Length: 536
Image 1: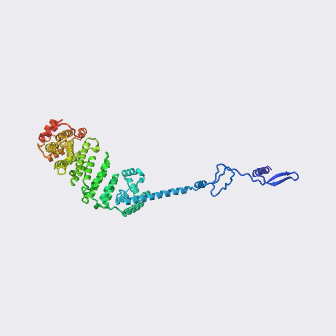
Image 2: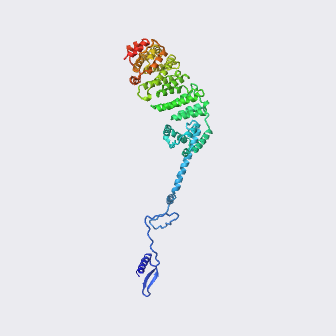
């Protein structure tokens, strides 16, 4: 019974919630009666956060009398279309499509530029394909050369890292990034670009003229090296390093391009340029050609900067072949720069710029020639003397005199006291007379006084490093004998004394030659050597 009553109560409550089907009414005559309930149940109010999207339903809002309704305009249609027509997946695909189109446009543009500029240093060559085949896997990112003002910085960064150089070459030739991740795909791109370059229209101008113009725009050592290498590979026979004097020869053009990277104290750039000049010389020597005097002068300067006398001697010998050192004042300026650079090395204590025993002996060979031959025809000493005797004009007399002074100063720093004795007797007087006769009369310089001051400083520097010796010395020796004596004396020097007086007196100072030194120079060789041992 209780269960039945509970069920009836629940049904009644449910009926109330659902709403009555019949409504009870009472009439005066009819009494109580029931009618059907035609009023609908009040709809449930949705929650405020339950939103819904109307896609294809058009609402007819034509209630003109309502204050919340206004006539529709074209802006409403545009705004609704913009809001409801966006699809995230479609937006992503459109972005990818735009990236592919940009990459394709850039690749075509790079390929066109490379094909239309035969002097572009980043053109693909056979050596690039060979280098790519030998490369190890590298995670380096691709260098994008289209970043406006940062292009030069990117190229410079890539050159300092060999693993990034291939990425730079790919970027400059319009090869996409994905090709660098797979060797077979990279090879296909290389072959396509190489074939495209081979079918390009090249200028009818001389390759030497094209190369000279292109070298003016190079901003990196690697760019200069690649440009010269590609031009030599394309048409080696049409490129000449020796032209008429009225035309700028190729050796001078390459030197001017290289000199942009020699500014500052960067030994790594000097070494890189020396490697480039050495490789170029080896390549030209194979066809019996010469790199030209200007590059010999540059090699002379660079080898002196890194303190390599044997390399300096090599370029000095190479410069004699085209008669570069005496043909113009630029050759003498290169020699003067090299000698003054070695003098600066004597004034520093850095290990990278100091000369060891072998380096000092090589420097002496550079100055005087082989120790067993003395004044060889292709030595720096003979070059200075010939220059003063056969100068084409009076304007370079001072340069030649400065070269001689630097030569004497270096003999002093090497401790070559026998050669100083010989030079005082043989060349000092002759150099003074030649300089006096060829220098302008209104010049205030006195060659005799300058030479005496140079010998004074050189002898004082030599006393600080020369090794005391009690060995018997002949009373007289020629230049070759004095060179041999000093060459052997260098081996006996105390290496600890090489950084003593040298640092304070790396350059000759102007002072009067004292009477003791002048008197000792007038003695025979054995007396001179004894006086050197007794001088303070």
